[in-house]
Image 1: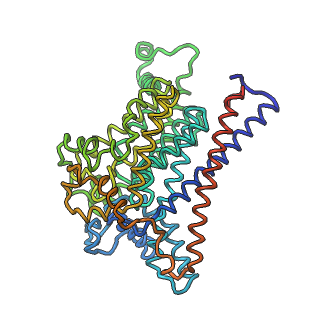
Image 2: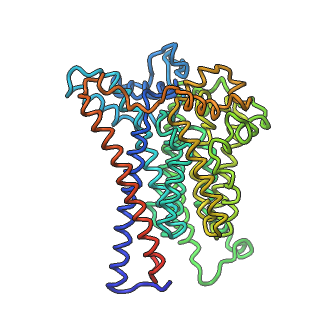
Image 3: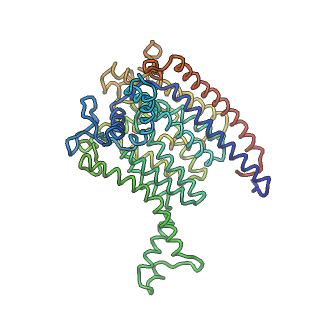
Length: 517
């Protein structure tokens, strides 16, 4: 493609930029509408209720401690005898605006149930976070493959065909963690393209907030650090520092500098970039460690100081990859071709990104495979692997170019994956787990797999979990409830049709244009 110049190039660039902005909004609105239609009632787990109570304590009582209750086993007694949520502060803090919204509506609409409003609005957090993650994945894929159409496709695949869909309705912290990790990778990638310092700062902020959300995210900090500072640059900076710290007569033998280079300026630039990335991340890490020490007296273990890695590694790996109750390959069938996607991604020239994505998946898999509760408690599928799903979906774009047979195979896997997520959305996982009430059967016996159980409940007339909450009981007019559902449905249909047209139009633009956007 030839480069643009003058008025013609400016007009084309602005056209493409406006088109992308419209597409971003369409992706967001499509998934907001879909996830609001899919939402059920409550927080689905004691994990979510503990985080919600932490938000309540911060807003209403101006403290981090929550009330000790027998139905909140994840609120652990701390050093001062009070109970604290064992989870990170990331989700309770970011949910504060939704909590304030519930309180404001309760003030305006007399007669509404305050507690019910809180449980209605605060758990909607992931119905906002996950669409934003889909938008971010669209932007990332569009940059990687220089194709808005492929970006739209991968965003739809992620939002519909992975556990992102069912987990958008559960009040777990994994969706927020997934967004933060993806945002870190995205801004580091953009920095490598454009070299703007603010992109490094944003990457550091999101990496730090990922750790504030889930302490386990700390394990990927070295991976992102290595990606942000390539080995050759690190070695040159190190050699420059060593050279300046040694006597003049030894310098040439340690760090011979080319005549046309400016090592000092390069070193300062490298250190500035490193600080721009690390400083925000360290800020949030310090908050994470201080909270852990303040509440439980442990810098790293937090509320998990009495738990640990007691599961044999082979058992956890089998559970994550092959077990009928928690296999990633069963709950997201599209990940069967993820290794092929990573290889194709690497061969397409994205070597650094392919290595980073593979390393993130590997370290998350190994870390959680040895954890005593590797299965993630009562939940749908391999909950602990939800944060790494974007890094398995993005490389699949490199597999798309190919013949009809490849396209048919990928589409078939996508359709199967969407159906599996549908099973997790329409049936509350608690309903089936309570019905069986035997963890060994649920995890390891094929006929008791939640996939089989949810299908049986769906076909056998089990209770569906698609209610948007008992809005009428809150004092809202029944007409308003129906309007809510109609608006969500119109968002899905309208944005979906517009996305289809945008994908077709942008594909024609990219195919016919001689310009590089």
